[in-house]
Length: 279
Image 1 (spheres, rainbow, N blue to C red):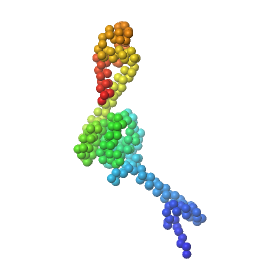
Image 2: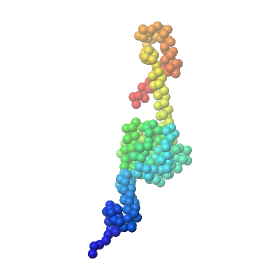
Image 3: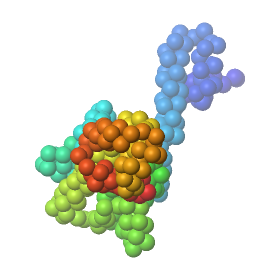
Image 4: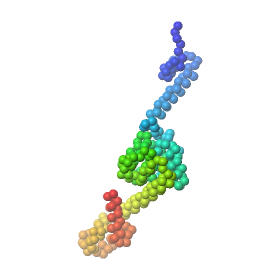
């Protein structure tokens, strides 16, 4: 006697064919159940493929992010960014930052942070050395390659001398060993934010000097260079083929545009700009 089959005896794909090709009263119910099972299989598979694994630890692009990290970033507000795959560590740092009045955003992996970070953001970055996927040192190196000036604090329960040396060579402010005291982290964060603030103020001053120089006409720039070279008005007038009275007038215009009152001040501004360009 021919054996009858139910959908339970078949795989999802065969079950779908069976219920769609038979005329039983249970067709619609079986088809709906099969579709649901197949959809769950697809979702489970895509969820697993979206994870980056490292020694059993995972980094999910969205699921592991804190609620704060899902919110839009304020482009100007100095923020403490935390990259650590331990939720409890992130919560502890966020609580400390809140007590200090510092906005904080946490991320479970380097890839998540990089996908949302914009170069030039104000603040500082706290990175765990051991992360799923891209490591803390690799993240620091990536930021250096991007030209980021964001001060970096590295933390780890497994910090060793080579890793610490490499981190400091890449410009890390400090490396803290877990478990660290709250006051240690608070001092490091305050110092990092102060360094970031000073760096931004310096960059703003340099950008202002560049704008002033760019506002000079060709003749004004040539005269400024001659003044900085210490040439007297008589020789400047001859080089530019203008009168000494015109030299005095153009010099006054240069000083006005540069926002200074003497050649010494002009020289100091230009010297500071050249040093920053060489750094």
